[in-house]
Amino acid sequence: MSIRRLARLAAVAALASVAIACSPATNVVPGPAMPARDTVVISDSPYAAYVGAPVRLAARVWRDGSVDPHAAIEWSVSPRFAARIAGDGTLVPLDDGHLTIVARSGAVRTKRTLLVRRSATRVAVAGQRVPGSTAGALVP
Image (cartoon, one colour):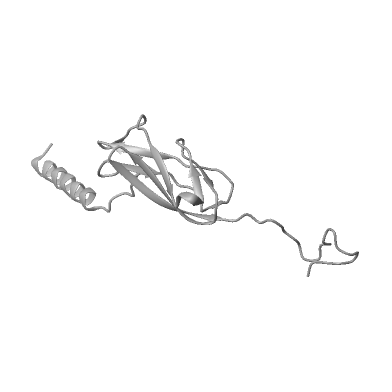
């Protein structure tokens, strides 16, 4: 192989290297974010809870950059008169409004707000006969 041909191949290789290095980065889909410090993360809960309907909450404890699957979690709720929460994270709302849920493991804790609504006690469809009313009475 001639020196001229080797020079051309070297030039092509150099240009290819520059082109690859300068090309836009490929899209990288990130995985779940890892907390930068020890923390407790409450899993997503429903947008709203209803009075008297149990809601199962869950949380993860992150220590030293990874999930600690054996960490004990202590749950609490405020205001206390508005809900009960069991040690396994089962919440039973007793009144409507906003609740603050706290998950604690050792020295780390986090909180989340949950909206509680009253369940519908009666539903009527327009044009439907009302039970117990005089014949022909319709819901407007």
